[in-house]
Amino acid sequence: MKTVSLMDISPFLIFLFAYGCSASCSVGCLNGQCDKTTQYCSCRDGNYDLKCSSRCGAGCLNDQCNKTTGFCTCRGGYYGPRCSSKCSVGCLNDQCDENGYCTCRDGYYNYMCSSKCSVGCLNDQCDKTTGYCTCRDGFYNTICSSSCFPGCKACSNSKYNCSTCTPGYWSTPKMPCRHTCNSNCASCITENNCTECKAGFYGPDCRHKCSLGCLNKACDQISGLCHCVSGYSGALCKERCPSSCNVCITPENCTQCVSGFYGKTCKTPCSLGCTSSECDIITGRCDSCREGFFGENCEPEYTESVSPTLTIVSTVSNVIAVLVVLMIGAVVLLQIRRSKMQTNIEDPNVPMRARDHGDLETATQQMELYEDLRHDDGNGENNRHYANINNINNPTYQG
Image (cartoon, rainbow, N blue to C red; front, top):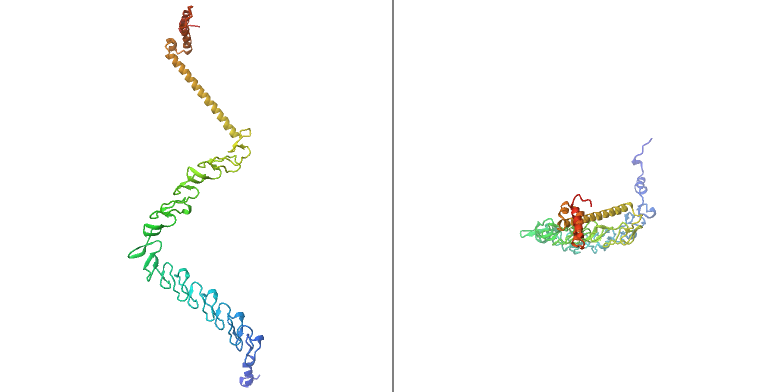
């Protein structure tokens, strides 16, 4: 087989292969058609130059640009002759002119709003041209980019040149705003001379805790007085209301009871006969009664339907009452008898022998006989009575 060398190939064929058949139209050419010699073509939308090989700028409106120069009308947020540059993020509403100049949003400055906001500028506001601003607490210099010493609320020219202290710090002439207040002070003149306490503390040195009964654990920073939460009372809210009392003026004067209780201290339970557990806080009166109960306080009806427990309690109470009456009667009778015996013993008209024997009945008979003698009927009956008296005094007398 004969070998073919480049010297054997026609120079025309080499030119045709290199510059003709191997060359293709740009993807930007309309319908993929171009001049086979120059590759010049008509451009499809979004491309420009003689061969349509360049893309229109990303900011061109509707992706349309001049097919020769690439110049276009910019959509929002872009600028430049071919709209290839984005407006600065600091531009208000992302709008800028053809040179990129814009009105700055808060926190940015210079003509293109490309410079941000010192962090020390108050409310993120600064001069839109120079960046100068009013400093917030703890910063200084014209653009408020330098920090004051931690204890300084405001300083100038130097981080240590403090004019006022941040809360929690205090000054001496040689060490302004370098000293800390005690841990309970929000601000102070000296360590323990507080001008403001942290929440939950009170007193000149803020070392006293507000009562647990204080609403939101907050109290007057001088006196400790506060509004009480439910269940506490007193000026300092340190007194606990009774467990069945929600709100009280003092532990002995409740103004709101737990459901189911009433009375000045809320310790008396509402009647079980109440339809609901609620009753009048003062009288205990129920709105309505359950079946088997009656009256304002819904007391149980004492009938056969009353429970055995109530019947037993009632019976025992009656028995105890009877026994008490009998005991009192027995004591009274005993006292009367003793009183009579004492009277007979001391009466000189009762014969001594009867008194000596302690025979109350004999003594009584003798007294009756003596009375008869004192009223003699004139018939000598007194002698008979006298004889009877002697017989009575005789132990062997049979009547």
